[in-house]
Length: 143
Figure 1 (cartoon, rainbow, N blue to C red):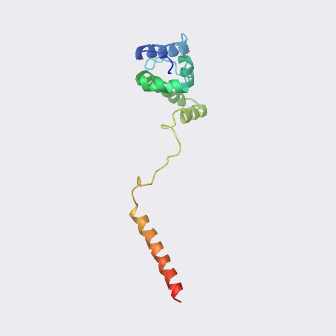
Figure 2 (figure 1 turned 30 degrees about the vertical axis):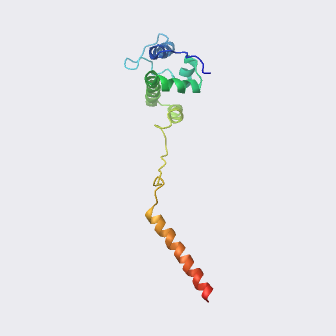
Figure 3 (figure 1 turned 180 degrees about the vertical axis):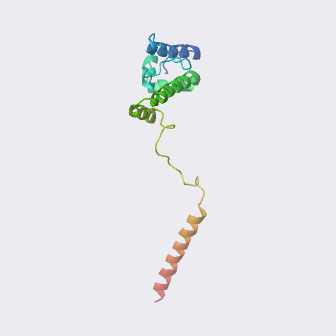
C-alpha cells in the first residue's frame, strides 16, 4: 500500500520549496532575479532533506508535480553555474558534472549503431570474407 502524500498539491510543494530558499537566505541580501544569494550552496540533497524526501520520493514528486521541482533544479543549477565566476571553481565543476550529468560532461558517447538495421558495408565485408573462406576451404579439399 502506498504511503500518503506528504504534499497534496503542487502549490503546497512549491511553498515548501520556497521555504528552503528563505531558510538559506536567512535575511541575507538576495539576487533579485533568482531570489537567493549566489554565495549560498543550495543543493539537490539539501532540497530533498528540507522536503523530507528520499531519492525515490523526490523522483515520485518530480513526476507528479514537475513544475516546482524543475524550477528548484533550475535555480540550483544556476546558482552553481554563477559560482563559476569566482577563483576557486573546481568544487562547482565537480558538483555540476555529478548532479546535472546530462548537461555537464567532458566526454560525449556517439552511438554508431543503426538501430537494429543491417549495415550494408558491414554485411558486404562479412559476406565477402565468408565467401573467400569457403573458396579457400574448397580448393584445399580438391588438392
